[in-house]
Amino acid sequence: MTMYISKDQRQRDSATAYRMVFEALGVLMAATVQGVFVNSTRVAGDCAKNGEESSTVAPEQLDDEKRSYLEGSIVVIATCVFCSVVCVLGTKECDDVIEGHSDGFLTGLRAVLTFPPYVRLSVCFLFLSLAIAIVQGNLALFCTHSLDLGDDFSLFIIILLVSSIASMPIWQFILKKFGKKSAFAAGMIIFIPILVSQLYVEDNVYVYIPILILAGFSIAVALLLPWSMLPDVIDEFMISTGERKDAIFYSFYVFFNKLAAGLGLGISQVALQLGGYVSGACDQSKDVGLALRLLVVPGPVIFVLVALLLLWAYPINEVRRVYNMERLEKIREEGEQKQDSPLPPDEYTIDQSLSYESVMVTSTEI
View 1 (tube, rainbow, N blue to C red):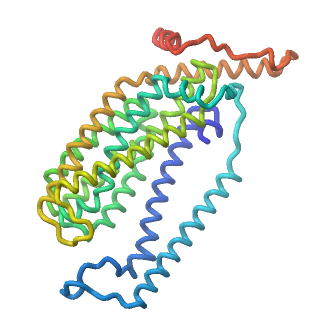
View 2: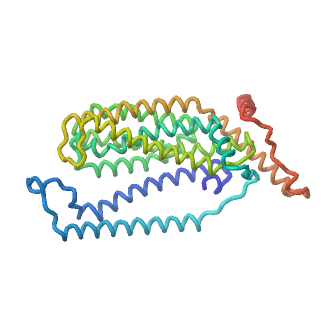
């Protein structure tokens, strides 16, 4: 709905920032619900108890655990329903003079997937999401078998989320001051030494916490900037073609994000299997700890570097974005004047003679 709640780029950027903050707050809330309702009664999955090789769980304990999961799910469902109602009743779509053309899904899909700025930004987002998915999916195992800090994992997650939430206003200020492309690149550059440090960090909580704070500061960029830059690509597309394909743009953007999560899971499974990881075993060999270190460092670092190269080729800089904003405002003003004139609406059509290359030339001349 970002493109439909406002025609002002600044308001859309602000809405995106609020959205990502509340998304991170939702994850933090889920971790809190897990801690309040489930952790106190969770007994299934314990490998040993009082030094015994195995433990027997009483039926009453299982009942308490089932009840805690039910209570936690009720809280989560109630929150989802409340947020959905607020979104439906509290937002209003704005009209735009540039309307979507019903020229068929496949035609629109081809136009979107061959649009150079969208391709570069989407693939950049794919590689960055892949790097984060690999690290995120193996963080619990990494803390347990590489750092021997598995008991502090819940604390680490909370620190990571709080750091991400707290740093989003800072990145919002940076992108306004220096531009989205520069802010995005800075966040990814900061992420690289954080990843490399995972090869050398030892089982020291007080050393790992500052690393997590910096990691949250960098991950906030991946949460905020890609979604803030997508509306700029859609604006560019509207100027180049005179059409709106917002649904296709956003749906395939989400698809690339989910694809990265699936690829990250597959890569992790293969790497852990090669490292000798045994699912369900409480004691793993030392090779597993080394495999986890190698899993969360070289691959993600390479993926972030590829994302940086794609971002470098991304053509919409701050000058171009301002030009697009002014051009769209002019198109909308002309459209409103045509709508107020006695001429029939069908006689007004948006000039579609502008090609992507002509916009490139025009924007570079200003």
